[in-house]
Length: 227
Image (cartoon, rainbow, N blue to C red; front, top):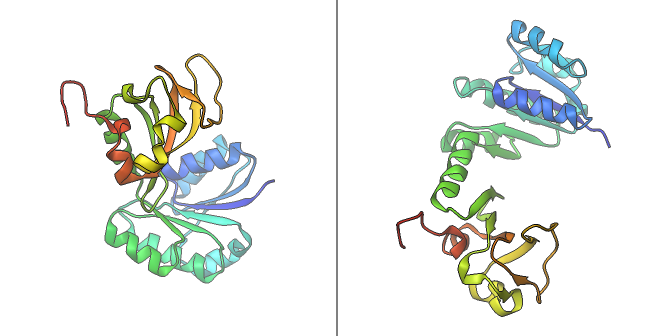
């Protein structure tokens, strides 16, 4: 099912969002104050409706009928903090049901939440934390922050868990972790059961609190170091 999305701010993050939403078959309205940028992007993505406009002006947004959109992303660059706050407040006032806004600091994030952002992202900080965790844990393949205190880790099965069944490991009871998916070495992904035995080379996806994940063998120290 196709939905309508508004993206305000066409830096690298905004352009990536517009391109992805367009490729998924959704209707996208992309807004930025720079007319020359709008003209260049319009040639590359003909299915997207690009508009050069000031999103801090509520009357302009009203004229674009943004109140009928399913969601909006305000991803104006970090050098324009006030503009991002005003655009977020305007969209909330006009009744956009879901607003994701980009913040450059914790204080900025709190302000965005207070003026109406349903979700606040800090992409540089979040990506930095994710890459740091992968670097620090050789067996980790990916780290997904689920917000609040929850996360998912994709990792190779640690040596402490190999040749043991999930029932035997009792990860939920012993470590507060849940294995939600398993990709056996050389095989297709499956949903694990209690009698599933983990083998060397298998890849698992495990969920839990960040604290419990950090304390588990999945977040092992880098080579040459011990905890």
